[in-house]
Amino acid sequence: MDFRKAVLVTGGAQGIGKAIVMACLEQGWGAAALDVDGEALAALAEETGAGKALLTVEAANHDEAAVAGAVAAAATRFGCLSGLVNNAGFSRNRPLEELTLEDWNAVIATNLTGAFLCAKHAAPHLRKARGAIVNLASTRAFMSQPGTEAYSASKGGVFALTHALAASLAPDVRVNAISPGWIATQAWQKPSHRSEPDLEPQDHDQHWSGRVGAPPDIASMAVYLLGDQAGFMTGSNVVIDGGMTRKMIYVE
Ligand SMILES: NC(=O)c1ccc[n+]([C@@H]2O[C@H](COP(=O)([O-])OP(=O)(O)OC[C@H]3O[C@@H](n4cnc5c(N)ncnc54)[C@H](O)[C@@H]3O)[C@@H](O)[C@H]2O)c1
Image 1 (cartoon, rainbow, N blue to C red):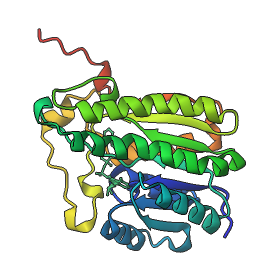
Image 2: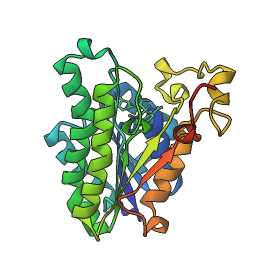
Image 3: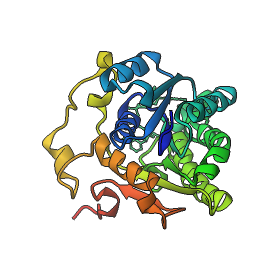
């Protein structure tokens, strides 16, 4: 099958990644969701009913052989691979003295090393398609709470990886990052883990936007950055956080 555009989304079965996959499908693009959670991938296929427009791959983004296989399978299925969204990520927040080397390595492997591997293996296809990469960083790349060393460092790495890739892949492939703030993903989990977000009025009210974010807030920007209308954007980082990182927090 030949698609005008086709996008590989890591961590695409749940949360923000799921919203990005669904937004790509709505554009009429092919979408490949690579995720470690097979149950969530099966639920995604059933919920979207996307048929051949959706390829699901059960694998970790830091398994190099699996990534190479997923990239090849997506290019074969869709006739091109024009986009990559490095979205898979998680945090293991704990006091510094209790953070193990295993914790650190696990977070860096998924959040940063996986993004490098996917970019490396997708690059030949993306160059051919004159495509784009979108990396999910975080506002935690730029500001912190205690006990977030591994996650914050991984996201700072994603921010820097983004401009390094933008330099290496220019002028063929544009590479940008999105840094979300608080995005409530509970309603975007697989059915066995799904719930409505349990949010207090103060959770919403502290944002200048008047509300906490939702996965479609990020997905719409990802689609924009993957599309031809963003042709003059590369090496950029787009903060989507309801204003939280612009807010002075001195107690008066
Ligand atoms: N939710 C937020 O508030 C928020 C804020 C800033 C940044 N982010 C970033 O956005 C991205 C998505 O976050 P989310 O909240 O939607 O997460 P989520 O936990 O809702 O979904 C993550 C998905 O990634 C999959 N996954 C985990 N490790 C993987 C791996 N090694 N390979 C492939 N798939 C893997 C999981 O199975 C899951 O389906 C992450 O990079 C996260 O750091 C999220």
